[in-house]
Length: 333
Image 1 (spheres, rainbow, N blue to C red):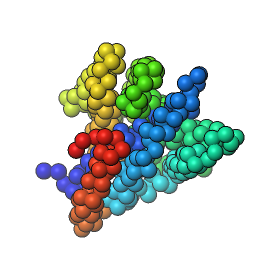
Image 2 (image 1 turned 45 degrees about the horizontal axis):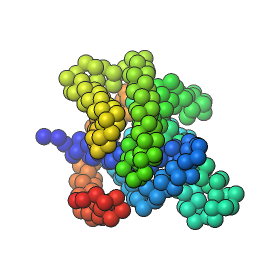
Image 3 (image 1 turned 90 degrees about the vertical axis):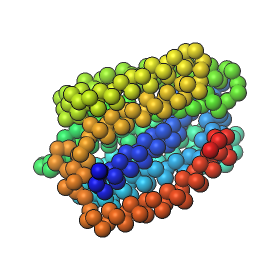
Image 4 (image 1 turned 135 degrees about the vertical axis):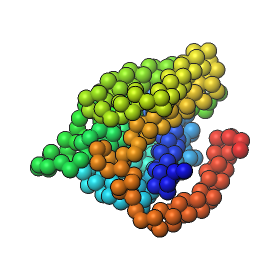
């Protein structure tokens, strides 16, 4: 039977998965907003702002939960992450704040104002940058760069995340979020032209994510060998790899044959398999190669209270979120 620290670590992975599937898709929509071109650009931007407007703030609850659980349950790991990675974390949080502010100002600004386009561009750029740094942080945690580094400011606080593997994970995250957003946006419009446009965007971003997945997997051999071994040399690792591959193939079939419900479900499965494969490859480490969920855990009394608060909070939060999606996204629950 798993211990309290393993249960809470699993909750962190679940929260991260939900944030990628919901908040990550919002970032992807912001990226497509930035890249919208041609005679239908304004229609695309209107679709994106209408689609994410009612729910984008609520999706951040999962990132807040990840940070809260990490801080409360694994304080030693939180301390090292927030210290060594304070630069990308600051850029990530800055991007989140700028993105939200720009979206709000853009929504209530006069459309004919020159500032309206500025706020829209800032919204798209901050979505791209935030997605990139989220991937960079996760890529750095997967590698062995956060061990007790000695040296000057650059050696300790910059070089750990300016490496090929974290940067590749950052680009991969962008492609995954863009793919999720495009498959979701297909369902947000009744216009055949826009559906066809986002179908093509989904296929191209899926191809880009496949290329980045291969490149990232190749880089693990030199920069994150432990996770490479965990995925390629164990039956469970192969299960997640096969599930991710099946999700990708099903997404291609769904998009190619215009079975968009299949494409959306498969996209969710594809991204979920990747995140859980990453979580399995990390286990039991929070920071490789020395900090695990066992040697960084808080006292048992803290974990018990945290788990109680988590259950009590979900009793309130989950019905509220489900009702929100039912009202604005017509999701039946």
